[in-house]
Image 1: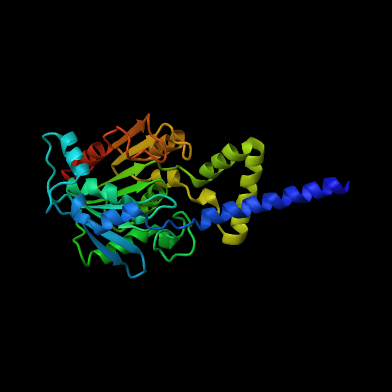
Image 2: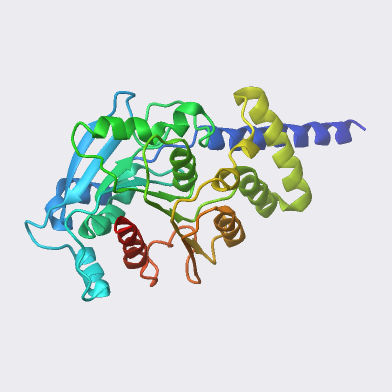
Length: 318
């Protein structure tokens, strides 16, 4: 009897430890430090055909303004994109594109992305999401807090001191950044012409349920999620089901280009397609990349930058 009781208490302790560990990973994800390849872009901008301005907003949100600078000619990535575009030559000024990174990332992760879009004529705004990169925000609430829903607006207000925020404004978000893109567009005082989403989930609770089941199996995964849900409510007053991108998308009519990897094991392509179908947009494109997973989706053979860029540029004319 004592052995059974001891085993039960041990399992209970293990369960609590697992719940608390996952809870901290959800609310306080580990911040990613600057990597060597980040410094390559930051220290040798002309090699990448760009210029970078570093700023911090009034609310202490770090962001970068990235523009085209072809003083030393086009970069390798820009030359490849130019080849893909063929006879199509983008204008020098096509507006401002806001780029939002994924979970556990930072704004500098999107410098290779910005390198392509600035060639297409966009000025890019790269922002550290709450509790990421150099952000001083203590916790991440997945776009459910009011300040998170106006997070990009506050940066745009600050950036307007350095650049012109005109009517040609666009949104781009990957994974967590996609969820922030949706909620910020929905609550923005600015008018966005179009949006690009990469590997974005329909609802956070489904992501967590699927992840728990994939690691611990159907039964124990369900128990883990239930424990996690109660713990998050108790310690952080947070319910993952409140982070529901699909619900917000129901009232968004913004033109949308969306890509998802067929091999994505973190956010299933079914979740991505469900989110896409929910959008009220009259103009929308969904591309399922058969070779894509959650980590390689931006570097497969799919000509993503060409297709998404042309989609955005087409909306300037309308």
